[in-house]
Length: 106
Image (tube, rainbow, N blue to C red):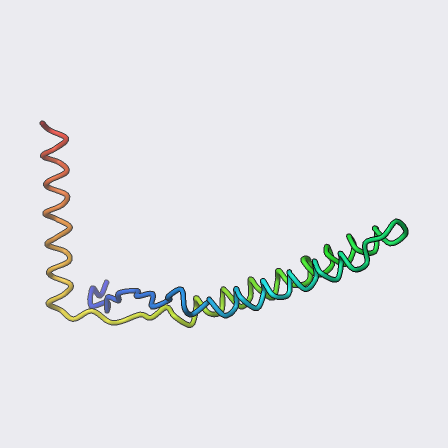
């Protein structure tokens, strides 16, 4: 088999600032839902208030999950490794493996 495979390094460039706006918008939606549920809360409309909170949670969570996942996937990069980087990383692995073997033997 051909052993000339290109090696890649996976780099995630996601920071908290990338999802900060999504979290703020979702918190605003939740607080507005709770405020309107409190407005509906009376002795005759308690079930409507609880149903509204549940409905908003059930409908908004998939959109929030979709936004998080697509943001994460947009910040994953695959960078090809140079030949010198692959030899350094393989030599580091052999050094770490020999150190672990020495620690296990002692």
